[in-house]
Length: 406
Image (tube, rainbow, N blue to C red; front, side, top):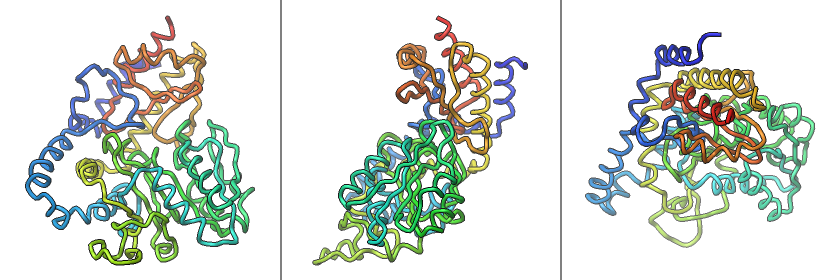
């Protein structure tokens, strides 16, 4: 086998995206020697720091309330359209930047289950992210709906055949994650949509662990509804606002339940009664988090320049290298890979499983290695393609190996 550190050097030397690492704020400074949690919180860009300062000094301080009529009112739609074009495969007028992921899941799912009163079932899987499950449990109690649970293996994720077995004329909505948060399983969105639509159901996808890392084609795949966050691979920062996608053909049918002034047909008219704005703007409720949207301008510029296909290509190389390191170094210590080895079914992160991993978190952090941990025993390795080098993956997993050896 080729020397693993030499292989990392060769991969970094041949990496067409290597230069983008220099656009991040101090990627090799501070106390971090290996950041492997880009699938939970992305690093900040140098350009983001400059944009934030300029926004505060010029737009906020300089324009004050006039900023709303200058441009801020349109940011949720303009940035939504840009995100749709750069990363979601969505034509203009279908994506908005809005609330948190949780709130947007509630808005869209609550609207979807209210379309047809004859349909009272919602299909979801047992291993989806907790928020998705919790929100749907709440909506089911609120609307007296039946939840249909698909038992999913964390290693293999949701399969079209499992969906085909449970959807029927009573199904209102199916909700799954494009990339499973625990294992990194990449679902077959187009085929699952086809199956659900054949039964007359609407489809909704959680894109939190795929946007900015995996190519997405919402329009071509026939997705009805989608939600995702912007603080992982899109580097929007802690608590950055999420986004919602509502297919154009449904915009006159679905009505989200949190009716606020910003989603009104004429926000500043402030008259009696609620009249929804046309198109995706009706998904908005309260005042948009303008300051929190500033980083997206820089991050979407970067992703557009790099290209999502190139990002995906590097992501697959990074995760394949992590798998090779795990096989060579970690399996002798009882570590099990619980992510797809098939690159066509693997998202942007790899999960390793071993009893007692939680006890290694503090020692890893003390050594400057930051992976992610998911109970009960999963260590997630999430290299972000634009900010992570192969050498960084080598440093992180070699430190993990050394700690296991102790």
